[in-house]
Length: 442
Image (cartoon, rainbow, N blue to C red; front, top):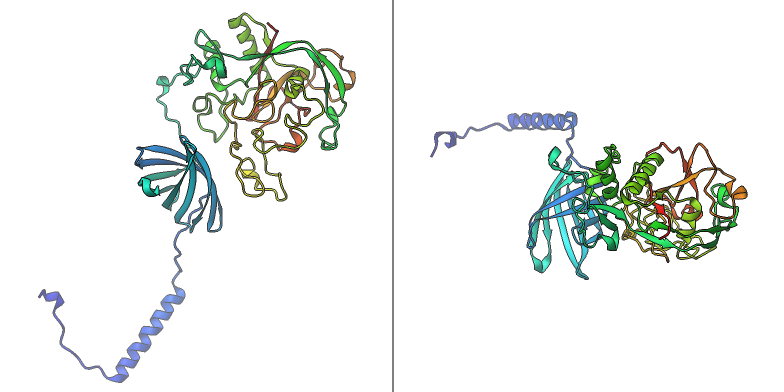
């Protein structure tokens, strides 16, 4: 037996001494408990964006983008994988996270149970797929960074750089001319329509400048089927040396990471410069649409209605805010993700979406409502409808603000009518403003 473990000789202690020792022991213990600070287990907040790297899995490595909203010990959120997405409800005690996400793969739902231990801005855990096995993952707070090494990351200016198959680009985005994406143009036949909206759903304080309903005749023209994308605009920047837009804060490397999303943070002169360049390389005359042309194309033959699907907003009809649908407004920060009943809109996002993600109107145009506001050719004049010509109005000859149409991912349905007008200083570059183009008919 080791010497330090040898039993010491027993020594008798009198009851009096024992009682005193006990009293001293308890007195000291109570004092220590009273005066010592109480150290609670550290708890972390979960709300916000996270990204997961799946390290080991039956299907190999993978990625997940996750959005959490924490309410006490309960979390709700949305998870997006490479090929499926879904919402979930789970539990989080400040350190331990558990939730079950049901994703759809090939039309078949699959439940995945995520458990993790959170430490600040990181977490690690497992994913249980039931009969399909188990995976491990590491999670990190924030939006997934886009790694580049400077000169080896080219500007996205062509079909190839944008990751688009040039052979199919005409089906979705336009035509490839000298490997540059030329917007796909749809012909709009001339005609007459009722411009404006004075219906009962229009807020009179907001809609005063488009309440004068009047008949307008429009000559034939062609307009881009989609909003101008990051890939298309960066082609222009690469060819002309123009400085690319500064990505919106918090959106990561937006221009390269989302080549098929609409370009934003462009002002009216930026958009006009793009149309001039497009005219030069194509031999056609491009410009921004007038607001009369735009509303005529947006209505697509349906006069007197608020939206392409009628007077009532249709869930998932466009990428706009849905936070006030129903009885109880949702949190402003999550307004484009959830309706008032706690149901996530399957395509709506708190930012732009890929062009063409939502249904087109009757004439084949996409994103005529939502996604981004669109710069118009017209200068703004509040009472212009009362004095404008009946045929092909082009707007006032001058002004201080330019008209924008279409609303964006940030706006709610009750202001996103076809007739809605907005205006901004043409020099402003905002994270919800973009554009599309028009040209003469074939």
